[in-house]
Length: 189
Figure 1 (spheres, rainbow, N blue to C red):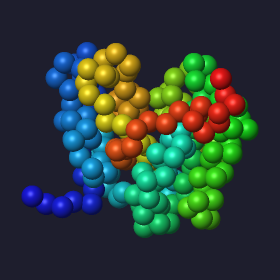
Figure 2 (cartoon, rainbow, N blue to C red; figure 1 turned 30 degrees about the vertical axis):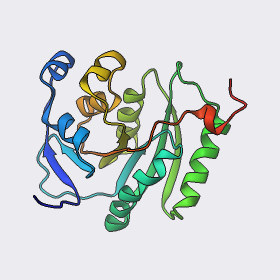
Figure 3 (tube, rainbow, N blue to C red; figure 1 turned 180 degrees about the vertical axis):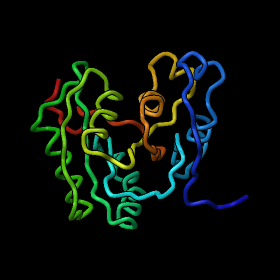
């Protein structure tokens, strides 16, 4: 057994039904590993990383995940673009979102970063559209690594981002329980 720092996997498109019924190797690996997974759809002659989009809710659970992403940011001297996608069903005020993201950026003492709040109908649409708008080289995101049964009922943002993305997606699994905005902003009801 190899103690890898990162797993790089090729991936290809599948229908949602096929992804549920037979899954994908990428989905399985992400669910069982503690190692970051870089999913790549097409061959890259020269893998140059200048812009990384980091999509997150920026709650406490995101801090441990970002340590691995920051090492890649530092390695490539890349600009990190924080993005929080706001959807009609999961509204959060700009003030609340910006505070979360500013505190997050300050914690990591980043010198080349941007904070972006993106509104869209679905999180996965917003992530892919934002990445395209900023000409990102990589999308990075966290996942709770839910089971296929959970994904059937609730859907999988990660699976849908992987499906729609034409660029590499770096995924890191969160081991901590999911946190809601109400835990951070008790006045939200």
